[in-house]
Length: 110
Ligand SMILES: [Zn+2]
Image 1: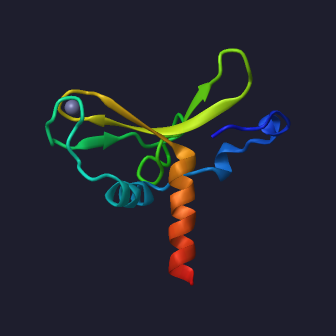
Image 2 (image 1 turned 90 degrees about the vertical axis):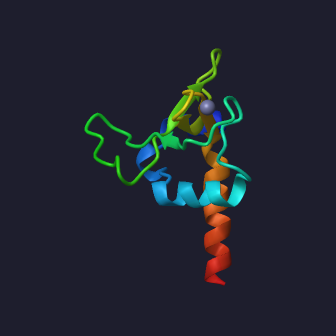
Image 3 (image 1 turned 60 degrees about the vertical axis):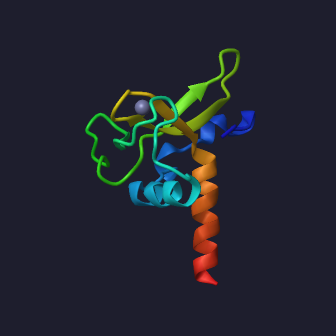
């Protein structure tokens, strides 16, 4: 997700969340296999959850990572999971998950 310059100060992480259950549904819908592309094993993935020091939302929400551009205040937001066999990390653009959740909810609502 790219945030426009004038919106940087207004970005509110509290209003931006990806529920863990929705993330699982997204992966079921989008990924053809749960096999790890690096090691070829299918031992599952550990999704990163929790967004503050207290990890008070650890059971509910995906951890949101902020990838800052080196030469700018602009950044991109992602979620991550780790292969339980080899530790490879899978990074997924948060905006794609949010768009899918929105589309899916719109379809269900009518
Ligand atoms: Zn692996």
